Length: 417
Image (tube, rainbow, N blue to C red; front, side, top):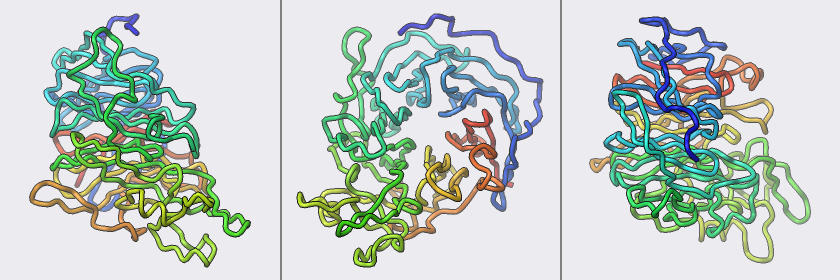
């Protein structure tokens, strides 16, 4: 679909040396950090990325992409509408040389030639199509630094428990495409033609790459689960299943690895299961063990476990590795399926980095304390109407972390004191 409006439009100027904005809700930051309001009045800001000239590019869901120019202190100096496109909803990425910008709707990923100095786009082309779902419409995009010709695209499941989400369905998967080798004509690649990096990942919204080239993802796991044993149904959903942190491997070595969904889920709170299960944190469970042999033992044999789990219903939506320490930073959008609510914050996952650049979390699969809070709301019992909801994360060259909040239409910035 071609644009009906010019790509380069007049800047919406902010006051020179603009002051920090006043957040709608208090920003509570960890010791050693300061949080500021960066921008307000946006329409559902989601994915976010910096270009090499320091412009902050932000997807506004249902609106398009806005570009911010920053002051030396990290505040916003001006903003410009880079692209008016109502189809865009989340994903954004840049090629390694930053001459190509990628963005996505729920069905299609496009690319444009990008001029960071002029803040302009041209030459729209389809890259991936055929991704429509009944549910989970975010399409995360990531260009591998190790393999700059490879675009990683995440597509979620079509339902809470999508029993048809097998390898051939294309749902609940992360696939890889050579964006430099597209079909003739402006048709793009069908999603199911991509190399399968991972399947059985319910909704792997956050994608990142460590310095060794390993792709990592964070998964939103299922809601309203039960455990049925001997005809008795146990409601385990309050604190199960755990949200997941996955190592998906090298983007160039896609080999259809299976990560469990829609059958295998991670135990977070063993106390909610019948004592006969004898589960521990991080074990696999299935809702209804059956005569076909799909049970925890089947999961152990066939599915790859996560590296770490997060509190259920936290809804992790992004992950970024720090440029200055060995930690990963994860945004939690927040729950709807739990009382009291949980999430609505940004957390730090302490990790270690090998000499080859491979990252791993310090805590393992059996831990429920493998991360700490960095930015949080004052009172989660007032969420979600009374809270900010973190979505996208981006590091600036100055080492500041920018956070979008879609529900409140804001962007925040975190910096070390």
